[in-house]
Image (cartoon, rainbow, N blue to C red; front, top):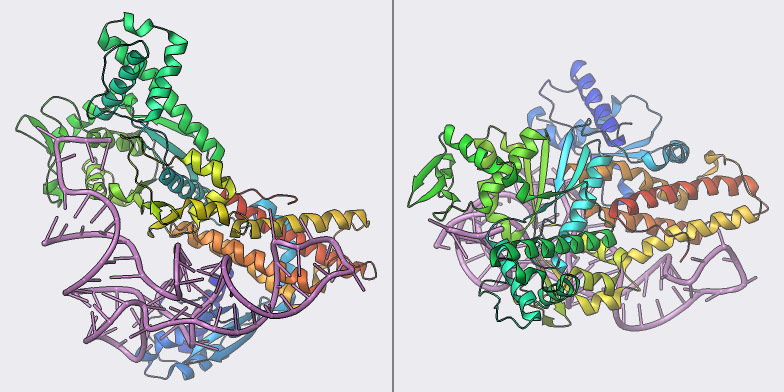
Length: 554
RNA sequence: GUCCCUGUAGCUCAGUGGAUAGAGCAUCCGCCUUCUAAGCGGACGGUCGGGGGUUCGAGUCCCCCCGGGGACGCCA
């Protein structure tokens, strides 16, 4: 199904060409025809500024061009009226009868309403959260989770074959520090004088984990050689941290197709192999005892270390290998990494990395989301994993709830820093916009229950729908496919909550003005029941993409 | 010092170079004998941080300045 705005653009292009052909407009190259939604509903459903764009080349006034283009427009069943307005806008209003008929189309489409084929089945991957497993997920991880999951859903709806992935950094020096911290806390359970290293993790959660392991395994690890013990105990602790993250994601309603282990890149020697490949291609320099990736030759400010002088590869080295795996081994055509703003400086390096592997850098999109500032009232909550002074995602989930949590995280553009006031989030939970949208869905469910009790069944004649409130609701429903296309194309999931609120608003308005179930008017009632069912479908589709429940009652 | 994000209503934030800049919350005034009042209607609220520029047209693009956040490591 093609989008209405594209149909209108095609209609305009044809009209302009026809006008040029019969000489009423001077011949010139046509720009891409702009079709937008006017802010003011008095200006119709769609507007084009084509005449304004053509005015200069045509040496005519926009108004005159607009009139000529309109005269050459061919008939269509969906355009009700066309007007020339303002300084040369062409305004289109959709036909009432056509609008009413679309209710049937929405009902027929059901869950697939809103599907648009931008991706043509291209294999895409969204990698997100990917937090270090050295500590519990913090509140900020929730933002990346909501963003990534909804974006993945949008891309799937837009015709991509999408996989969701969580990258587990279970290798490297941070992990060694975590292992040492866990081992120290474990040993302390038995009176040992092991200390958490200075660069280790002081958080309470490490002690709790160590206590659990001590209870389950007793002194077992104290009887092993220290290094072996640290490694084995460390892996147990690590796996529990990963399971904990998985539990948090489950409760947030985010499910990954794969949890990819960084360590596996070392186990299969893909990291070493990738460094060899880079060396063959002339991207490696060795100096000061370290192995450098010569990114400066690729336009970067400076080179970056891949293998430290102590022989341990950097995170950057495994990250290049990881992306090699994504693009070249697993064949993703498009990879989207979602990172926090603190990793922003890593983007050009990463792009240079895949370029050096022969992968076009455009195939990697890194979506950066700004940090959140956690507050309790006016007090800013500082966060540090090492001191353990953090507000966990778990805590926020327990306090605010999944639906409000996801809606809240999603409702801001990734570019925007956000204040997350925990007290406010709790207080707000009752008049959070999420409940407004859910209420619309529940209200519809209630109407449908009532209608069933009253014995209303069968399909309605949707042509009976012509009340302004009915038509306004239909218009908003028909916007959904365009919203999906825009949000997917521009990687802007935050448009969804705004859309859903407006859809809910128009439903509530309709509800106020039009009674659905009227015994004396069975035909109209059935038509309105069809409308209401269609609205419920669109609400559910939008909520589903956001990972928010669509309740049958509240 | 360099780079990235950002500054819009009291607060939190939307806003594809287009028409009179919007929403939610907060405040105030109305609306339930009717399918859910977690709802609806109305009011109040703006130097779009400041200054230049680009053009038919700038909250939106460019430059400078100011404020907020982040990054510039053989950390991740």
